[in-house]
Length: 67
Image 1 (cartoon, rainbow, N blue to C red):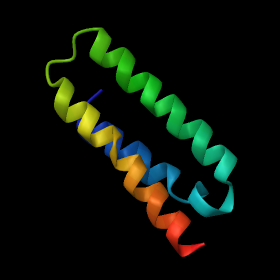
Image 2 (image 1 turned 45 degrees about the vertical axis):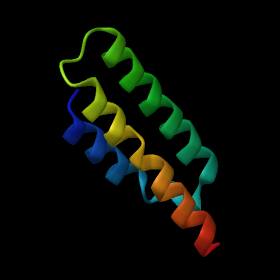
Image 3 (image 1 turned 135 degrees about the horizontal axis):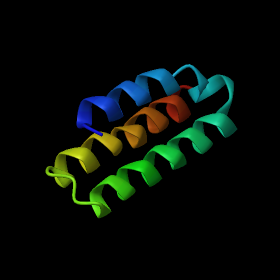
């Protein structure tokens, strides 16, 4: 898993941000678990991977603000 992989998954999740918030949260939680597993298993750039995963928080706040 790379930071670009994480960003791509976030892009794929975006359509569900407002239309299906439960799916968004489920997908986000799974993404975070996958990132943590990758970090636990010795990812060579854990900070970059974590930073990419935290982008989900920015997307979520933007959707909540526009609701």
